[in-house]
Amino acid sequence: MSRVDTHPLSRLGQVGYLIQAMRPHQWVKNTLVFAALLFTAQFTQPELLLKTVLGFFALSMIASSIYLFNDLRDRERDRYHPTKSQRPIASGRLAVPVAWAGMVVLLVGGFSLAFWLAVPFGVIMAVYALQSTLYTLYLKHIPLLDVAIIALGFLLRAISGAVLISVSISPWLVICTFFLALFLGFAKRRHELIALGEGAVSHRSALGDYSANLLEHLLAICLGLALQSYAIYVILSETAKNHPQLWYTLPVVSYGLLRYFYVVHRYDAGGSPEKLLLSDRHILLSLIVWAGIAIVVMGA
Image (tube, rainbow, N blue to C red; front, side, top):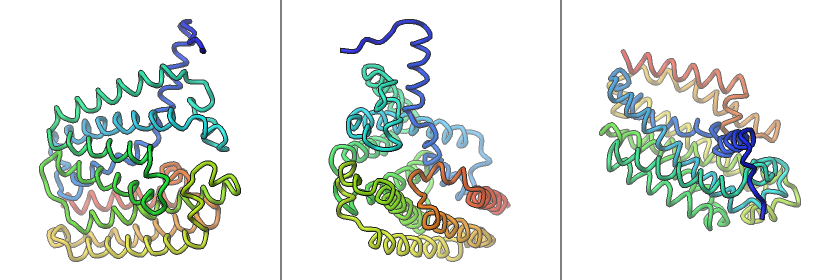
């Protein structure tokens, strides 16, 4: 059995590896909790903004605990993956007992904060944690359902933000979020299938039931539905009736998603959506411009 060095520098290194294993770069997904605050024009109220910020951190702590659980469970398989083998747990840099301890602390802390903020918000966090755990244990091996479960996680993020500040959000925005998440999920599967080649099935059994051609069709379908539902939201929803200039964001969103689609095809990207969003200047600029227009329109 390996022994964790108790030297202060080693302990500091373990903390650093633990933070890395928490995948803070993936917390960008959790910014969906701010969607309700933005699209109900409540972002000017300090108490609701603070509550949503705390909700973001509660969700991020719970998500990170699940990332740790996933990496602990899959550490042997991840060692054969070209990039996942570099993760702190799979590479052996982060001690397994430290990872387990970190997972428990994050889970308890996240749920304590979530239920303190609002019981319904805590319940949604529990559903999120349950579906994420089931995904890790079993559902990620079932084709199509694997990506649908990921999309459900995005929906729960968006809905939790509305529950947290006690507002309702348009069903069209929820539908758009779902199809957008499916689009990102299928793009990730395409990247894995191409990048891993013959070793794809040994890493993720569901990849054996996908093909590049099938994923191409699924990507196109989900992209079209995401754009269509967003167009309906910014033109015909109740929110759009109160803020008719919201449709100004449609061209920006269309370009951003088409750019993402282009990068996925041209460079076989999409394996890490959160990194691609921040690394591609066109997509990042589209995101910034969209947020700027939305804030101005909703605040008017």
